[in-house]
Length: 317
Image 1 (cartoon, rainbow, N blue to C red):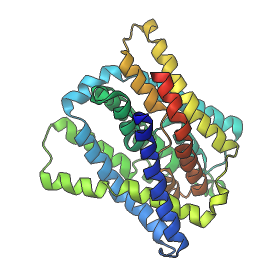
Image 2 (cartoon, rainbow, N blue to C red):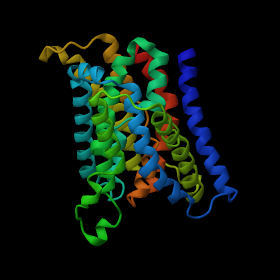
Image 3 (cartoon, rainbow, N blue to C red):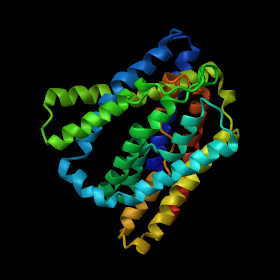
């Protein structure tokens, strides 16, 4: 029960911050440009800082190198999720502007804000090395490939025709991750003033992203939160296919003589089933994609996680 309440607490925190943005927007606190302003602040400044400091705080050069050999299962799990998502995009004919969000919802998880507290509550600190393995794969997947899909999936494509925008090959969050890994490999100590600055600026990401979701909900109308076909399959991919793919890989690991300890396998399955990234609406807005759809999948995946938690607890325990 304590684990369940701890997990519910993380979900409630998210919903309360979304509610704050919703209420303040309804009361007219924000100017018309405020949403776009915080969107740019997050993607160009706060998110790169958050990624950089998160890598420095959670990893060292030696730990990163030590974790490499155990990354195969989550890596293959994410690859399978991408393949599943790309197939669904074709089969369901997901419209332009939604595709990047749809694929990211299935393939990439909210490992830091929800995944890490849940993992600690379920397994304690002894599972932290296994969490970091999934965290590295998820981070590389999100900012090395996922954000690229969103950046190059905008509603103007139908009018202008598709043309690869070279400026979008290296979005700022990806730059932040690349610089973070390079710095990590040098094994240099980050100065305290720099570490604190990156931490403070990076901490803006989650609250501002959730407040932004509340603003979008207020503008579009909360009644528009619904489970359409694209949303339903994105949620099926996130909560059923992604963890199932990891579970199958774990049970098949013996065929390739790969040892996956029980605690490691449990951690991978739990992380694969966490909700969609809360920053998806921000990324969709910056790419001129379907922000309402991105908001829809984030809110619904967060709400449905309340149901997913006890199922997860039953499966892993």
